[in-house]
Figure 1 (spheres, rainbow, N blue to C red):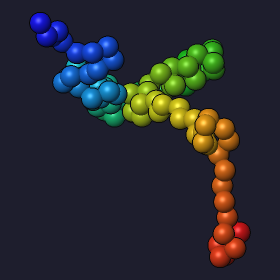
Figure 2: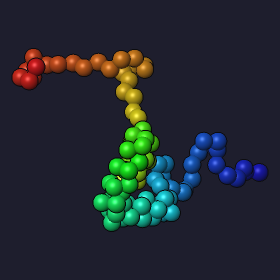
Figure 3: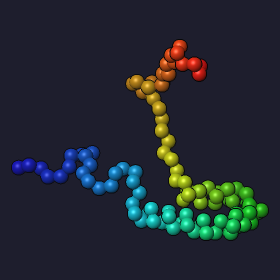
Figure 4: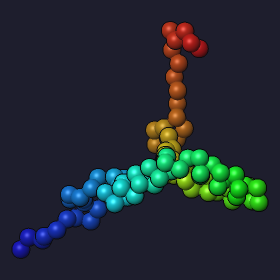
Length: 96
């Protein structure tokens, strides 16, 4: 009898890895529009918070920035076998 289903680690169908779902996209778009429509107010509110607690104002600004420009994933570059990256320059490269 043949087994049904996918093998461990095998993906079948569904969203591609890293693709946000529609609700997440809609929410981010709504927040972005809200921030654009209230740019002056947000600036005033941040200034008011910064007067008493500059660290909190920076924290709020950082939180708001995630909706305008999502965080980028970190990427580590490694060479062959996980070693260092080797860069070879040619004597023909005039910029060196």
